[in-house]
Image 1 (cartoon, one colour):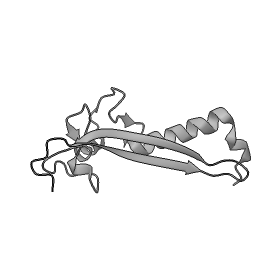
Image 2 (image 1 turned 180 degrees about the vertical axis):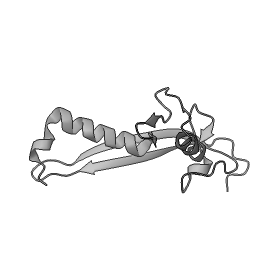
Image 3 (image 1 turned 45 degrees about the vertical axis):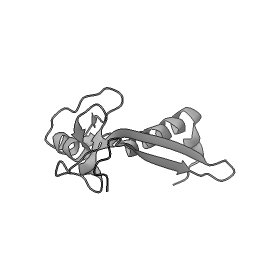
Image 4 (image 1 turned 120 degrees about the vertical axis):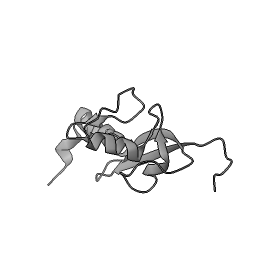
Length: 115
């Protein structure tokens, strides 16, 4: 469907929402920028991972996930995913979650959460 299309920029976006009684809902967004490649590359991941090349890496998410699983560094330039502790790849999902956790820490919202 994208054959012949030159502009292939894309991004993954995740939004985490948090609702607590008597408070307005909160939303936390994480993005991962890149482009759609012409053919599948890599074995790891799922869904669009083999066709989504992450900005500034030259690698698809599948290739990056394989590199992290193999213990190879993926770099850290602020825009591309990086290996986190335990061999986890930082993506749009983890970025949204990090924003949420940071918000909870600085606003002390933990005090209203019950187990």
